[in-house]
Length: 118
Length: 498
Image 1 (tube, each protein chain N blue to C red):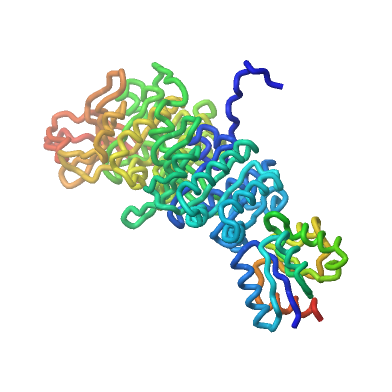
Image 2: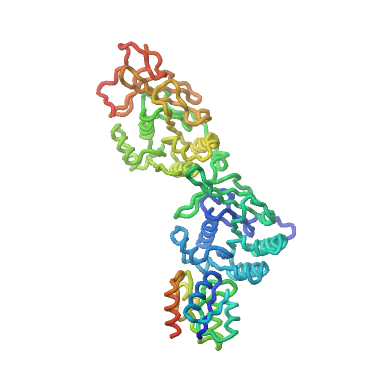
């Protein structure tokens, strides 16, 4: 079973994304900000990180950069999601594999996850 | 480096950037202050706070918007996107949205204050919004702990010069610990008046500054939030000193100018009172037709569109369209809708200020009265409004419609208003034989004599023409003239009614 880490500061967003991924048979870990995300990554094998861009304490760009700087996490693909456009996000961090503009449909999430993990 | 005896500098302001709100707050929030913005769901707190953030960020400031148990950011931004103030380019660099609910759930108020402190520092924010304060209050183990949280937040805000807005849907009438501690409390309401609603703001508390007390209306449109400071508060003192003048202003109808011994005294307010169809708007078009670049005119009307007014003027032989094109006259039409009384007044005063209007025709008073949700305000409202118009140098003519077509009784639409009018001109119908005639009379003119006679007038394709005084008849003001057939006034030759 593949494990996906979902990092988002909004409880509702985590619930929706995590439930959808669990329904597809993935194991899901969740964290409320970048700092918690790093702690979760350290706990075990993660195959994919779905990360929100704007978060308190450590944002999505900060988390992405921290992952790239750590040999243990640098090969984990990242799906970045945000309510702001990709151009703005890419200016701050471009090391992600796919981008999802919020709001998105569950089908778009599942398609993107499958494509990235294929 | 400051010396011990240096005076303490006055607190700087953080303008809200919201139309009208900074007038109410006499310049904006105080930097580093903590303010509660409260109101029931739908009162407008979130839109207002977001607009303040967007305007702040768009003008070079930095803001952080922290939600607790509130609307999801994605949804929130979707709702804000159509509004004129929405500016995606400021997100996330100058305006940052985060949720701290997880932290509150996991680490309580201590964790929350840590997140807020770090967001102020990390985002270099000089404006912080916390949306959903009630969630923090509910998670506090005691009132004392919540007070400590507010106190700590105040300390951080003050030390960092970051102004904080706390949004809560808590009970409006409930005075709790946080109300006593914060620097200001703003209450938003959305009140129902029979079938219509009207939004309003009451500033309950605003430490360290004067402010306009009482209730102020506001409106939320696609343009954003717009406040209309209550006329009685904002114009309690006229913006300029009253300049007395002996100059008379022609009304554009020679016969009526003659009755007024030269015209209306400059800078006064005149009530033009009469039933529907008597010719009040026609009178106003004559008044405006004498406008010029030196004496700009404004029609503030509720009933007829500018196109219709121009056509009507043309039928009277008046070239209103040309005057509008030259910029000598502006026709400002207020479509009949659920208007806010103070909004109308601010629009009017703004238009008068913008063009330094000298000839102002308001058609009519009923448009204002229908917008008043509190009839007891009307008299004082008009008193302050007319004071301001006078101070701005406008000579104002209001039409006031009365219900009675003929008859001995004329009821002025609102009690107390007639005392505010410096000049009063009545236009009425009188029944003579089998037809109705029109007559005009001047009842008072400020500091001036006038012709007290009742004169018949005619609306012709050359404009209004005033006839001779009624003579040899009685009972004209009862609506039914008793006169010998030989004494009937003859219309001027060549005239025809339009």
